[in-house]
View 1 (spheres, rainbow, N blue to C red):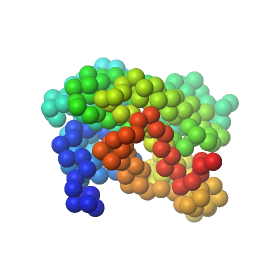
View 2: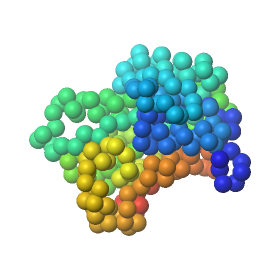
View 3: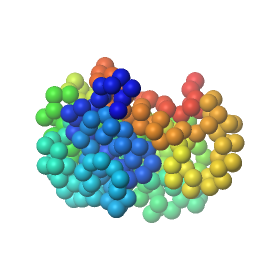
View 4: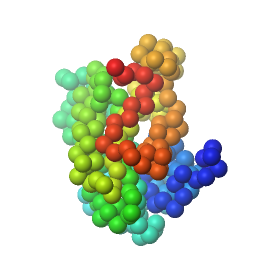
Length: 246
């Protein structure tokens, strides 16, 4: 429940992609606690166990899979008035070591995926009185890291798409992007498997000298989905412990 005693998303019907793990899972959990009906979209529905909501299998990179998943969602929830695009992959490689296959797969999941999901959900979002879309970007879209050509390019694309959609879909649909820094997820632990080394890296580059917990990012997504941000659209919200501020 919210600290105020009032559920921030009461009555809302919201799609969360990538709901099985990390930031997506934390978002789905918090949204359910805040009164939303949540459609839990993921490639691996078995990992959705323990979450409150409607589990729906989807491959966000495939148009037919997305169309089917969104129609199932709308039928199960009685409509859609919120969307959170979290599903993504995180390949790490120097430019010369980035294969065309990895490049194309990253674009398919991280950039084409949100496009397909948002386009499919749009007719339902337009029927809502006040709808929201929150895309998951990255601090890499603001201040890029080396060895993240494909990932950084897709997250930069998401940041621009957010602004285009915000202008195009206003005033009934608000569209914003959250750009997290390093967060305690499996993707980050795979990148830096040594917790001590990761902690030291955070101290070197983050003003708050630590990495984020998934729930901290989910709370920022909650803000942009709730009425608390009713006059916010087209915004890029850096939730990165101070790495990219300038």
